[in-house]
Length: 472
Image (cartoon, rainbow, N blue to C red; front, side):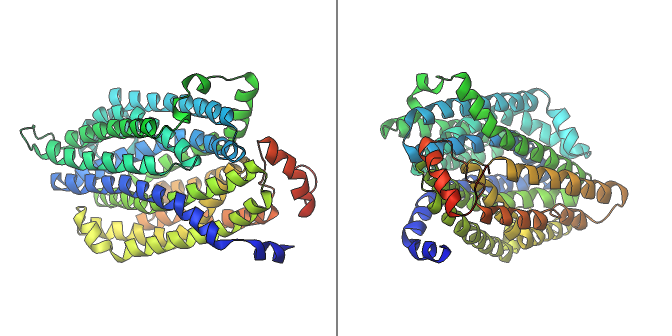
């Protein structure tokens, strides 16, 4: 049976579909990350502490990302499967619930950044000079958060319904505006005052508004329906809400606790010498470059597999998932190696030198080594989620992080006082264990759990065919 499936698998169409979704999303993410790199490079003349402060503020943004990404992952589960079965009402309803939940998260982080920036910076570092710079940045950039989250919600819907060019083009416009306004506001060009780090925050906020406007206008021109079915977005019943949160809850909790865990790790590393903090800040930007490229293909994997599950093509979903894990991990590793090979000009251009450069290079080397396993876990988790199994990856990630990673990092950082690079290695101690367990689950096929009528009807024959009877 396995041989027959391999013979029938159409690689040409599969790769074409992967590229059609993955490349535009990867380009969009790379543009966004490139803007962050440019921010860092343009802030670098203000001093290494400005670079470090910008990096710590980005970590706060990452915490917000973790809090709302659970709703994105849950929404993508429904978007992709309903898209596969062509159930427009399901798409509209799911988008409305996803958007409301995401905007609620963004409102909380906006208020914290705008009105309690000192408290936020105090959590991430005990270095007063870096705190003071970060407070200036957060107080302005907090107002960009709702705009960024709104554009993310719209982009998730567009990607899941295979309209990836609209968010990509919007990102081009947003990044171009951000870079130009950085030049204007940071250094005081064209008659504007030189605002320094505040100028970078202002440019980010304005460019976020441009991104939302560009997506809205292009979707309207292209007559894309789902973003504009406003009344249908809020036609919820108790059953619909229950199903949404039942499937989304593991993803939401996973991302929330993952974000808290990463914050604990960043707080530990934030107590290292300033050179290490600055090196870490630049590394996080480069990590975003690598992850951003990879996330394009991860999004494509979610859509390609979730769409098949929703349409009842469960064998195709099963075969696609197995190939996607190894293919995307290989692509990611190639990108990581390329970035590491160019580390000297990149790190230097981003303001690192001496001990800061050494720290940044070590962070990058460690990350490239573990990236294949780490991203293999990521793509398996995203694939399971889009197929209806939100619990397995969430439980494994939560248990291993809080049982292994966080205790190891805290003890090594605050008790044993190990070197920063040793602490950083321990941040990934759980990845090989999870990889083995996730692989076993991948080949079991028990992660296929449809929410559509077509998918549910095909589930019985799929389980009988693969010898997996009973409740998965």
